[in-house]
Amino acid sequence: MRIGFLASQRGSNMQAVLDACETGMLSATPAVLVTNNRGSEAILRAERAGMATHVLNAITHSDPDELDLAIHEALEGCDLIVLAGFMKMIGPRVLQAYRNRIVNIHPALLPRHGGKGMYGMYVHRAVIASGDTVTGVSVHLVDEEYDHGRILAQTEVPISIHDTPETLAEKVLKVENRFLVETLYRVCIGDLEL
Image 1 (cartoon, rainbow, N blue to C red):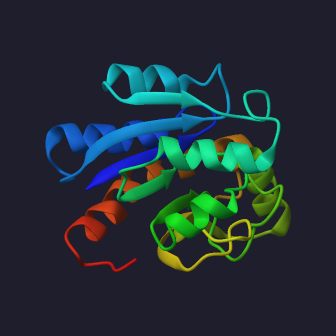
Image 2 (tube, rainbow, N blue to C red):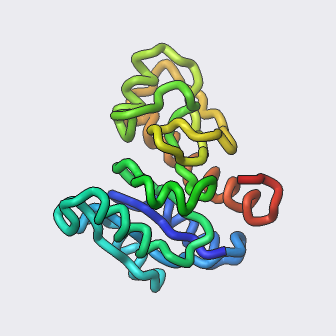
């Protein structure tokens, strides 16, 4: 299985998948990174892994349809697309070409604390403000709405009364990296259907 990645920032979840591919835990080949952020740390991680990288955004392609086409072309030949902190909506051409083959990881138990604007620290602030006693990680398929597609797997992370959004973010990230790899492993061996 050839995996394409879309990432905007650090790419720590992508790195967890890269490590799992390198050790043989995942029977997959990391193929390409598409990022909308020229300064993304994910670029360095991808280059170290020998992956092709493409910076594609509204600066490189001012027309949204042309940007969608460029991303589609960059991902050509991939069997699965993993969103690893990608902060943009996926275009219709890519969504159609990879229907039920685009996976996202979200730092909360969807459908709670998901949707437009719910990413990064915004999610953890919302979780703390809600008074929830548990949060978690959701791996889901991507569709035309933010954080809406079918949930493939979820795992819980307990919230302590002393947690802040920052400490909660650290706790969830530790689980995210492992859980994404575990979920992709289940996809690779056919235990989890997309």
